[in-house]
Image (tube, rainbow, N blue to C red):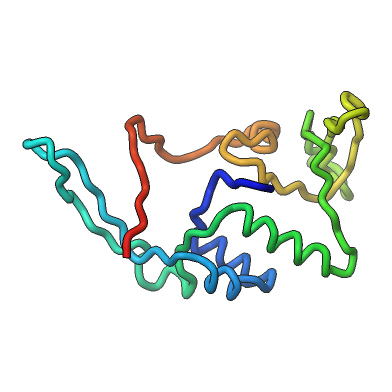
Length: 166
């Protein structure tokens, strides 16, 4: 991955990184977010601070909220995979076509249909059965859609930007 589209890492994600063994590396390489300040245009069209909040409330986690490029986190996951007992390697030439869950199945209740997207293999389908599927495919998740899940939260219908200042 050359570029990422996200860089904010929540405290819960940091706890997962700790389980995978690379949270300390993320903490060393990232920018820690301690507070967030909100600004808006004032009556005189100049910027005015409207709020300053502590980023992570006390007692939520011992981990910080940090900023680090998504591609860097991806590299850390790849490193864990390469050094695992199975020497797991991702296959980027596949995309989800369908996902079905059979709640009556004792083993492998999830059936996933994948389509090859790599040049020369386009359109060929593969079916896999599994106990679990983890969807890491973003806000417009095909996995979430396939299981009838909904994205919860609010969307901001206004222009905004992020600035990190020390």
